[in-house]
Length: 321
Image (cartoon, rainbow, N blue to C red; front, side, top):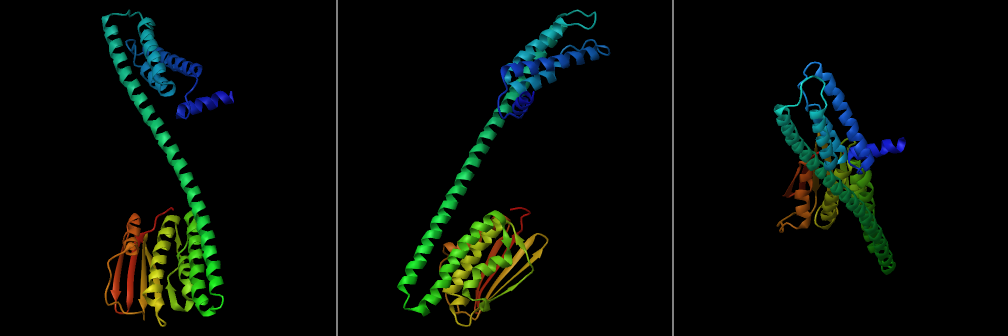
């Protein structure tokens, strides 16, 4: 009995086609219910011959397919003509109604079959997307594993080369560890999200905690937004280390954020860094900063002031990752 119920459930949901016996049995049950409904209506309107069979055709076609729907429509039409619940005999008017009934049934069966085909195609596409997403996750995990191994190898090789130059190694070692930490962080927050303060400390920590100030309340970022902001913070921090505040001995950075309703505003202010005399053509990093938040109904404004780079990032905080 449980197996029969499970088969019926899968057939009704379109997961798997039901057996021929179950389809015919369901169609017969629909015809029986429709005939009983017609018998009940005959006490009020004895001239209702085919109307109760429309739902039977619809449900039979939806469950068993168009062939079962056609058989149900034919049998329903025959029952409407042959079975009488009054003294009224079949005449030309009833046969005209029969033709109209079959025409409407044909449209109903076509509509149901068209919907079933769309449903099957949708399930096929959904299955393919799920498989591609699983493959993407597997590929990303493998690439992250390989990247981590390569970074460890680079770290070991450089350490061996610079073992007699501790001052140079002391400057390079934190940057390499920062890259490794960033990769691990992105892998982790892609699944669970993180707090914005933890994200900034992870990105900016290797440059020295006395070089930056964070102002803002605790704020949990959903996974997708967290990954996007981590890429942007990493780009800004890298540029600050090359050309901005972190490249100068007295350079400082202040990052602040506020939330109003579901809108997040982040301000990145660099001071005491090298003066920017000429701005080069926008590269990949600048394009990333300009477009990354568009998926969150956001935008980024970058200004090159005499005191240093000034960047404002605004976006909507999604309710889920």
